[in-house]
Image (cartoon, rainbow, N blue to C red; front, side, top):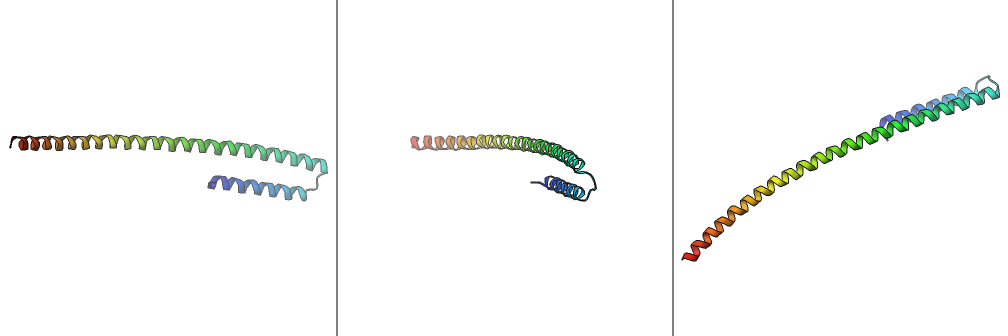
Length: 109
C-alpha cells in the first residue's frame, strides 16, 4: 500500500479512536449516543468508499500509463530490430556477392 493509503488509514483509525473516547466520556443519553455512533459509522463508511474509489481510479490510471509506456518501448525495440535486420541482410548479401565472385574466378582456373 502506498503512503497515501497508509496516511488515510491512520487518519481513519485516529478518528474512530477519538469518536469512541468521545462517546465513552460524553454526558448524553444512550439514545443520543447511539444516534451519534450510527451517524459517525455512516460517515466513516462513506469516507472509506470514496477513498477506495479514488485508490482504484489511481491504480487504473497508473496501469494505463505503464501499459502505454511498455507499448512505446516495445514499438521502439521492434523498430530497432527491424533496422538491424536490414543491416545484417545487406552485409550477408555483400558477402554472398564476394563469394560468388571468388567462385567464378575459381571455376575459370
